[in-house]
Length: 160
Image: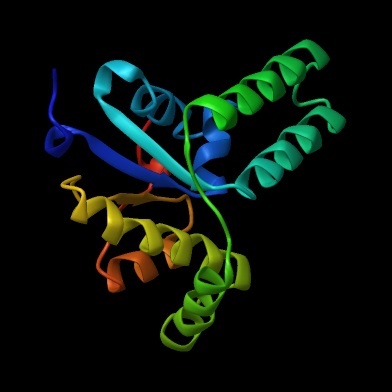
């Protein structure tokens, strides 16, 4: 059995996680990253579910996603949130950290929440002997902020 210290932990914001459900630049990399064989844990904040569902519904309404594919993607999203992802709850501490982040970084409000959520789980995970998380987003400003705050980051858009 693989040890905790060998497991990789990734935090995906909505711009990255949506790629698991809708084919776009970087989707194959995200899908591969989520495979159990890679010994990874995927973390995100609970509200990301609504953001990803909204993006899928928009694609469906714009006829960029068929009704059957939309239904399958929505079912997969629900299943993954119920059974696969580590979910970060947005509480007062996360909101306060997000406010603090906006004083140091050029972040939109919701991006600050995403980064604060990632930072809030990084410490307890590393204290439990997990490796530091890698923050994944398809937003260069957010990735720069994550780097500035000491997180390793990746942009799925650079992968095919």
